[in-house]
Amino acid sequence: MRKPVALRLSAALGTLALAAATGVVLSMPTASAAAAGATGFATQNGGTTGGAGGTTVKATTGTQIHAALCGRASTSTPITIQVEGTITVGNTAKVSGTGCNTAAGVIELKGISNVTLVGVGNGAVFDQIGIHIRQSSNIIVQNVTVQNVKKSGSPTSNGGDAIGMETDVHNVWVDHATLVASGGESEGFDGLFDMKDSTQYVTLSYSILRNSGRGGLVGSSDSDLANGPVTFHHNRYENIDSRTPLLRGATAHVYNNYYVSLNESGINPRAGGKAKVDNNYFKDSKDVLGTFYTDLPGYWQVSGNIFDNVTWSEPGEDNNPAGPNPTSNTTVSIPYSYTLDAASCVPSIVTATAGANTGLKVSDGNCVATTPTATATSTSTATPTATATPTATATSTPSGSNLSIGADSDGSSKASGTSYGNVRDGDASTYWSPAASTGSISIKWGSATTISRINIREASGATGNIGSWRVLNADTGTVLTSGSGAGTISFTSTSLKKVTFEITGSTATPRVAEFETYA
Image (cartoon, rainbow, N blue to C red; front, side):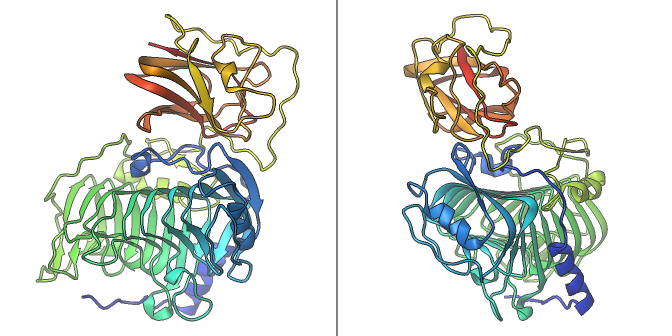
C-alpha cells in the first residue's frame, strides 16, 4: 500500500487558502436549492430532489440546523434549511427529536431523507466541522464552503472528511461547494469528499476541491466494492496529492473537470473500478489517470481530454499509468443525457462557475456561464394576494381530450384554502398552491393511462411564478422531462397510473389552476 504523501504548504499558502475560503462575502440570491435540478447519476434511481415541497427554515448555527431536522414530523418530512454565517464545532450541539439522529461537533444527516442544505445570503462556511451523511437518501448540499476539517489535532470532526457519506446512502447531489484543507494526513486532514459502505447514485458538480492530500474516495478498502455510480463534472481540483477520485470497484462518469497541480496521482480506478473520462483539462500534474498503489487493476474509457504539462511515471507491479498516450481499455454506459463543453474551454468555464458564492452559475453546454432559469426565493414565503375570481393563464390548449377530468389527484403539502382537486376540475377559477415555494401535484388513474403531453395553467396574478420543474412517472420515479415555466410540455409517450409535476424553483408562490393531461 502507498504511504500517504502529505502536502508541504508554506505558512503563506495556508494563510491565503484560509483567507480565500473565509473572506468571500459576495452578494448572492437568498436561494432555495436545486434551481437548475440535479444532474448525473443523482438523477437516476428515482432522482434527487432534497427538501422540495417541504417547509423552508433559516439557520445560523449548527445547533439550529439540527433543531430544524429534529422539528420535522418524521425523518422523511421534506425540509430546506437555508444556512447563513459560520458553523463551528462550538455552535453545533446534539439535538433530539422525531425527525433526526444528530451528534455534537458534526453536521449529522443520519437515518433521514428529503433534505436540502443550502447556503444563502452572504454565504455559509462550515469551519473545521464536517458534514456527515449516513443511512440517508435524497439529500442536496449546495452553495456551502467546508474548510479545514481534521481527524487529529483540535478540533476534530467527521473523521477528517469535509463531506463524508457511509452506510446505505443513496441519491445525493452536492453542488457549488468549496471543499478545502490546509495539508495532508500528517497535518491532521483526510479526504474532502468520501463515499463508502454502500453509497450510491451521487453527483458532485460545479465544486472546488483544494489544498488536500486526498481529494476523495469511492470505497474505503479493496473489499468495499458496493459503491457508486458517481458523476463528477465541472469541478476544479487544485493542489491535491491524490484520489481525484480513488475508485474501488465503482463506476464513475468524470467530465469537464479542471485539474491543476495533482502532485502524485489523479483519477485512480482499481479493484475493477471503471471511469468514463470525457473532455477534462489536466494541467501541471503527474499521473492523472491510471491504477496506482495496487496490483488490482481498474479500467477507463477516455475521449476529448487535454493533457497540459502532464508527466507520467514508468509502469510497475503496483503502478499502471494510463499515459503518456491514454487509450481506452473498457466501455462505460451512461444512462442519462448530458452535454459536453469542449475541453479547451474547461479552465475558463469551471473558473467562472465552480464553488460556493458564484450565484449558482452553470455552463450552457457551449462554454458560456449562465444563471439558472429559476430564481430562488427567500425564507419568507409570499402570501397569495386575494384576487377576484382567478383565471388560468391563457395558453393554447393541446388537441384531444383532457384526461385529468374525472381522474384523481394528490400532492405535497398545500397552502390553506386550496385543494388538489382544483387542478383537474376544468374550472379556471380555482387553483392549488404548495405550502412553500416549491412542491408537487399529481394526476392519477385507477388503471394505466398513456399520455405524452401535459398543460400547466397558472392562475391569474401568478403568471410566471413557476420556475424550474420536473415531470415524473410516479409509478417508477423516472424523470420524463424537465424545464422551466408553465405551459404545454411534451415527452415520450408513456403508460402510467400516476404523473407528477414537481416544481423545484419559483419566483413567487406558484398557483396551478389546471394540470391537464393528454394522450
